[in-house]
Length: 356
Image 1 (cartoon, rainbow, N blue to C red):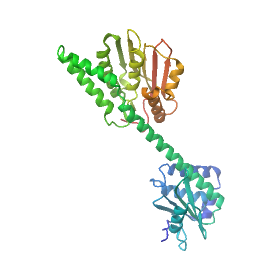
Image 2: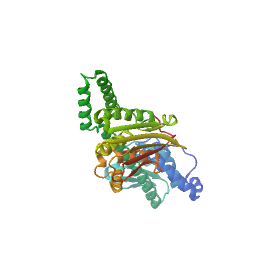
Image 3: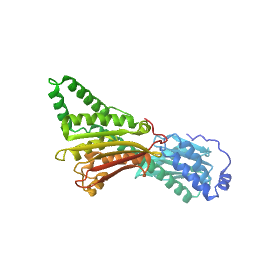
Image 4: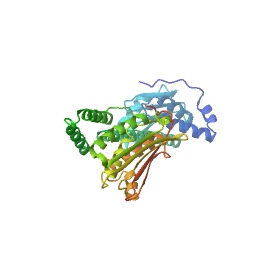
């Protein structure tokens, strides 16, 4: 069985003349990398095949995944069974050449990912370079996919990371108020249910500042019931940032850290302040406590994901913010031993593609 041809404008010589400009060559290579971001089975693989044909000034190009699903740009010779050549490469993982058709294996991370077949007078050195370009694009796509999967796994772990100590203390307080103050007991029980629902529910990737502030208000209400006068709370948020979209569960871990690692460890307790406001085109949220503080080197380690940070969630929050908004945004920690801790979260008020 032969691979069907796709009609394309011009012949190899015409493409060659068009691609003499280095800027055009680089632009075409970039388009190929973009087209293959979703792999050889992605929606833009046909566009990638067309651009590969342009780059090689070839009569025809075929891209195949492991199925093999074969996408063709241009025309392949009818007297050569290109499908058989592709299947041979898939079985042998070695280059196959017949007449003016060359089929090249695409090896990604030491594993066969697909085949590139080219017809015409393309030089073998040029074919190898384009094959390297394709492999690099596929590797980059796999890395991005792996990073996304890791971020989702971390978010699921963060959702499940509810302190048993906090749950026990909260429910003990609720139980102790059932007889003397049933109305207060019911109120706290509803707060507890709201807190658990928000922490564990299958939300989308993004929520709003308003929802995040509601969640931390609920959490702090429960902690005040547990800690009594040892915990004071101040919360202020500007109306203009309430609708700002943020990744889900970015504030709650920071506020929990302020209580658990700042106030609870300080004799006599202290205050947690949460402030949200607009600074130009940015939304800045600060979580500050006057608790025990920490060595700045330890704070740096926490943001790097070392040791205790894995259970505190700071590294997770910082990484997710930087992945979504870029390196200029994320988490900043200001602290010193005995001086409390201030954590700043900075995100843009508007970001394309980010919505609750």
